Length: 280
Image 1 (cartoon, rainbow, N blue to C red):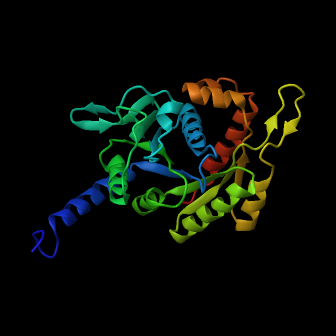
Image 2 (image 1 turned 180 degrees about the vertical axis):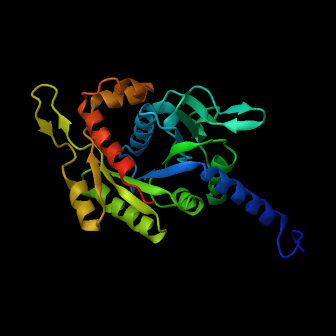
Image 3 (image 1 turned 135 degrees about the horizontal axis):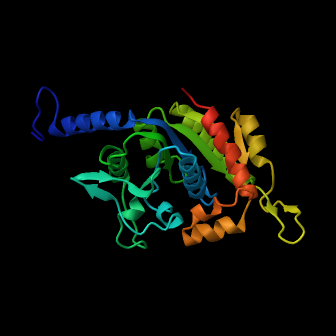
């Protein structure tokens, strides 16, 4: 009994196969898919993903930012996104932050930002696949994917659904973060995902009074770990109180106006490596 079978397949199988074809077609219009992940929460991963997407878009690239952190979506807050997805002629489009940057996040679909998303694995897998298949991303140079920390359902779904995704792994310098990042590197290797490199975030703070660098969370841990694991260090991003303030206000784009900020010089170096180093 159970579901009707036609030629050995169920209606569910056919729907899945049809969605697979749609996903393949949508992804074929996107040149680079960069998966920003971390082994541990609290390392600033979402801010890194959001700022990379923003800076790439300001350089003239067509960029999509897909937030698959379903339980703790931060991207709408970082950009102060008030609206939701755009529906034109029954086609769902990303929220247009600018002419070159479109955003999709579960946080844009929740009426109450404080509401908890209590989902098991199958629902999360379905949501991520729908983010890819049901959204009209169009032709993109980059799709930046912000993932929740760890190596659970969301990263695995991205790895299986986007086989040519390239990983950027975010850490902080201290060992408690590096230990989990090593697991993320192992995860990428097990699912055959190319690792572009590691970003050490919160890498020192310049004292506003004397200018001396303060290593609040240590220094150089990302470089040592990257060398030991045989991956590249893409860059070291310092702590910048202005980044914290603008992130809380949803004004990350205001930071890009000051090209002399140390944090912007660090990101420019990372972006140069991302553009020049690719897996294909």
